[in-house]
Image (cartoon, rainbow, N blue to C red; front, side):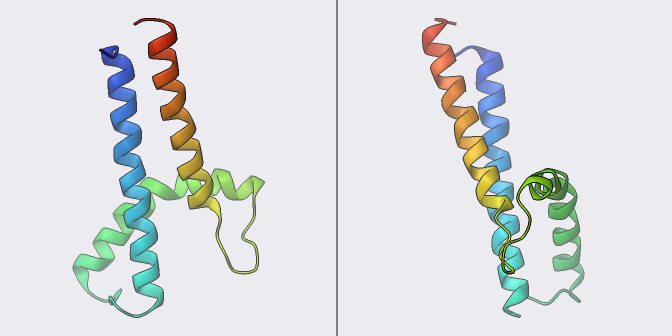
Length: 97
């Protein structure tokens, strides 16, 4: 059984993981002209996703800039989320909370 605080943090990280994934896929679909930014729904969804993900991506880009047109910040964010989730699991076992 996991501590309720650890459980909440784990699930918030999991939700953010999905949000980052959706933002990445949507940006690819926009770049490939599969979806149109002039569509009101798409524009609203992209603005919402950017508002949620861009502050974190910006902090990562300060350390790891865009390399040859490839933005590595989502990969770093995925790794950081995975590390934090592993740390939470480890702490809940080690501390018996």
